[in-house]
Length: 279
Image (cartoon, rainbow, N blue to C red):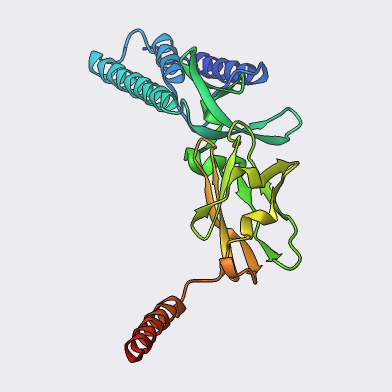
């Protein structure tokens, strides 16, 4: 009884290994030696059939079992591919980071918004700023607000001063934003009152506030509020402090002297009535 030709079997397995190495050198992606894919499984099964003993072949049960394993493996592979593509579709409109490695081994990261997802040969590709990247290069998905915070309008902490005896314009450094998230205008308030826009001017990152905006503000320290019209309606109310020194009586805080003066007026009227009665 003839046995299995081990030389033929070894040759076939060597050819299979050579084909995998050749595919790797031509740029095709292959699985690692510790991973068995459906293509490798099918090739091993065909190799086994070709090299079995024709006088003592394997039973049908063994073949059916192996085919069932192959079918299960193929279904799992298809499910993984479908799940991966479905997950890729959910990336549309999201801010992501993809990482690439060039031929020299240099790693670069690209951040941007996914415009659309394209499926090529069963693999998903993300389109970012006109270029496509394999979904397997995806390394981070970010919340939109978190991702664009660096692009939104912002203001550094500043302390300014206004003195009514020496009034001068106040200059505030502000950032109107960038990359499509910039603001085209900003409203400013102090002590709950919006400053008239005629007292505001902007040039080269500096917002100038006319001293007239503080003429009716009493002595004290106040936070300026900034309200931008960017897509997220950015509001900054805790960065800029203005120390106001104002001796203008019209800007004094209201107190109880008004009631006292009314009392004096009433007393004066009573004294006048008494003088008229004596006369």
